[in-house]
Image (cartoon, rainbow, N blue to C red; front, side, top):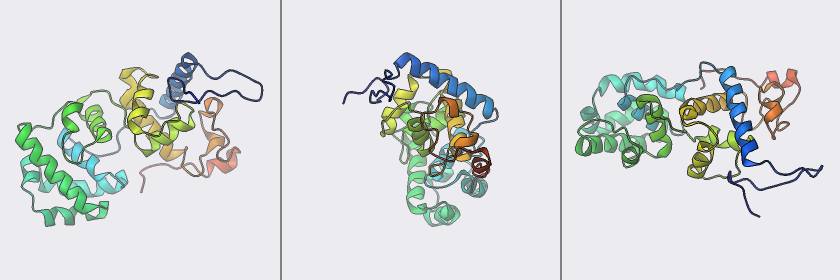
Length: 249
């Protein structure tokens, strides 16, 4: 079956209504973004950092790990390795011990040391501020690069993590499962200036209300615009019990 520009299969409901047009989808997506902005006015990156290098290291550590756990580890890590040269010359065993609790600590150590060595050798010791350069660093994919660009360099980017992928599919914006395709589809729906903050809003919503197993549909501010309404409890009393607040463990 053919798909539209958003990678969604055209369907008709029981009343025989036509599938959502691209224009209607854009309008619905932007309205949902406005509601999320009102719901989460303080949405921001929940990783602690003071500069691009610290955010890059923290984002590498955040793979398969909560931001709360990463934030418990990074003060020690940042104090021991204040400059990229320190990471590049780090003792592997010492770094592994510091970041052990974040999981996959051997692979993450390899990525951090390799990233730092590459930054020193190829970029004069400065974390690059372009996507095409960031993704060439060990342990850095598009998601990590967009986190760094959007939050440390002010360059708009969409952070397509697991929350983001799940929610935009639930929103009916796309049926794609490939993160890069999802990124490009969502980029066509929202103004570029909104990409970074929208990513935070969606991630906050996914952590707080729109959970993977039992979303709190009955208290969701997007209920009237979401085709997945009813996936979770729809009564306010039951849904309220599912709402979570940060920090997340």
